Length: 127
Image (tube, rainbow, N blue to C red; front, side):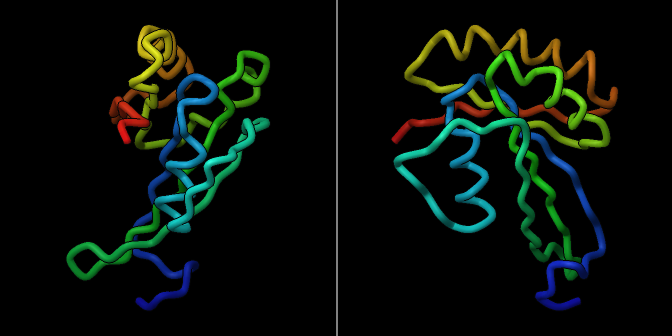
């Protein structure tokens, strides 16, 4: 399979979750478009992007969903957890309160995501 984005052997949905301002959108844009913006706006609702990579001769397409971290969007964003095989739970290493909120985000995933979702905590903004 070639470089076309609609050709793939495997498709995996992954969600980025965490408090507002921890850098979820920049992780998404860096991984999918190799872009980084110092001036980022808060995500409203949900955005997503894709990236295909080759692993052992197979094309794997990652569909990565960036969810809003603000409380007022919680009812909207939790619906997007369904069908995700992975979640990156992002916190800002310079803001301890975002790490303290990891437990709340874990509960959110347990309440709304598939039972077998793989969850990885990500300490962000170490640069």
